[in-house]
View (cartoon, rainbow, N blue to C red):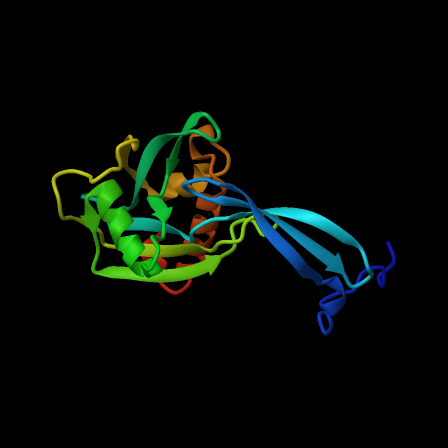
Length: 204
């Protein structure tokens, strides 16, 4: 391979990669997303229709605490997922309601799914979960030193999930390799958590 075969870090002008939007229309409405058809044209004159999912923003919360043995743990939830048709273990998560701030959604989802709260809700980052087809943002928060504030969860009518405590070391080892930890958004969350441990090494 020749050393000059690829441009390394040359991002001075990316305008030639942009496809200009000419038109868009909603093809299908559902309670959790809209399917949108977008007509775009490239700088080279190519024209085509593309399809995207227009969804509310998401929040994922990483509940963290030290157990009785002083070992760092996550609080996670286990539930059946209708997309993959299997049970997965995940961090608490949900959608941002209309007019709601992401951090308020994080507190709400943490309370609803786990009956927990925190005095240290730390914003980690926000990213597009899949730029190929998604038009929303996934927000990630670390809920440090969580504690119980209620005797039971406040789940939606169709939500069924168990709350479990898992050692941080186990999640780091198994996420992305064990069938129970089969969720790409959770990998994003763990990666941001691990990045944050450079600021706060006590987390692991």
